[in-house]
Length: 352
Image 1 (cartoon, rainbow, N blue to C red):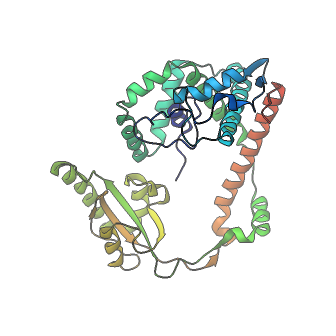
Image 2 (cartoon, rainbow, N blue to C red):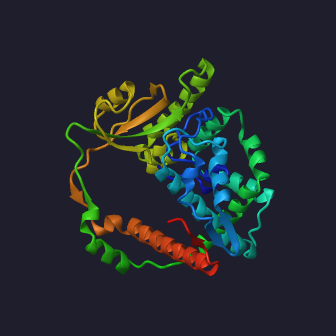
Image 3 (cartoon, rainbow, N blue to C red):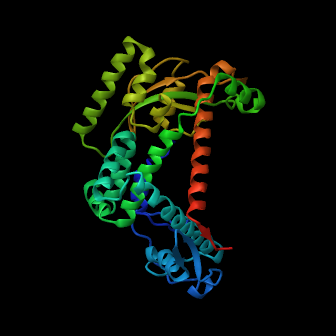
């Protein structure tokens, strides 16, 4: 699955760090009495980190770490987990205070307006299905996107992180002008033959693509009828020209598989809901189904040919390989920039 927008991730986290061991539930997790005394933070030095003349003290780090848990440590969190989270907080402190002055100097100043702009820009870029999932998570907390933005745009930490995010996005653009030639790609292809070998699909597996018009299983008759009508219209287009399947899946499907032109890849029996699986079984390779209803909504399904073992040719992977190498080079340049910036800011993490 394609990663969620950096902006949404930042806002959702609200510039905080929590324990990986803390269960993720719809409701706020129950705060349990600390199982590790604060005295067990003895692995922390008096000054945990410093950068640009600013210091993060042991007391400040403990406050940042425990604040999201109401001052108490969740059950099951041991000292190793405390050290891991402490390291992440120290690293975040260094990165924030090293990059923020550079971002501001480049014209990316923290502000409520920037938070609103970056969030709204992000919503336009991510798939509709992810937006709906985000709305549902907020609704479970009694919030809407509007109230969520209003709440976060006033937070200094979020404003600063958005300024850094905007700066980084701009920096990536400037670094991504690196040129990758066909010769570069061919050299990588020849040096890494195993990366281009594709295994055959498992015996008895199936392969399919679909277009999904999503609708809640408990939706009313009118809502379901409207969703089915959308699916029927798409099916009518495919009956005229089946080659449109990938394009329509990208533009209209409300499943994350839309990013792969609707392809669900290979799957074995029992992996899909019964109605979907039966429809695939009844199709011949390349054939497109009628509209199929499942608990997820209405599907138009195409059965795809099983994958045989093969080695991809250079011609097949050249464009994708060049794009990947360009992204890798850009990432390396960005990491080098971060390291240089942190070094110039004399950033140091004293946790051992």
